[in-house]
Image (cartoon, helix red, strand yellow):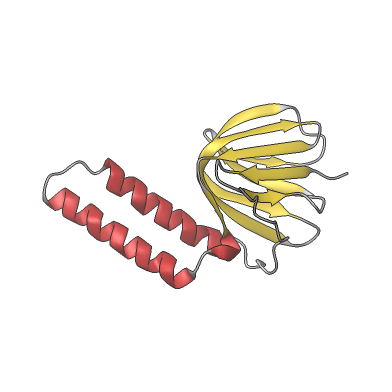
Length: 149
């Protein structure tokens, strides 16, 4: 038995099962959950976290910036506020983005400004780096054609 998975944002589809998924791990608002075939029907909010997808022995990652997931009859729909495939993230650019975000946070704290936005930017930058390194086997992703307008 396998799962059908679709991961999308309002702008694009990041994963649409052309191959069968064996397992996924989601970061929900109440912690991580693993989903195997015949999982109980569930709708859950998603926290910022790394979505892990197992095909056979290969794992893939997607950095998910919140959203929600619906699990019904071995069909998993992930609706993310924003998301990025781990394999699409440039490690150098991600590290630079983290450094800039941390600098902005330090500056905001030093000047007594509101830090919520800067905190979120740091969390997003760290999540992108985590998605790169979450699983060492991040070779070829199933290629998904971008929807045309």
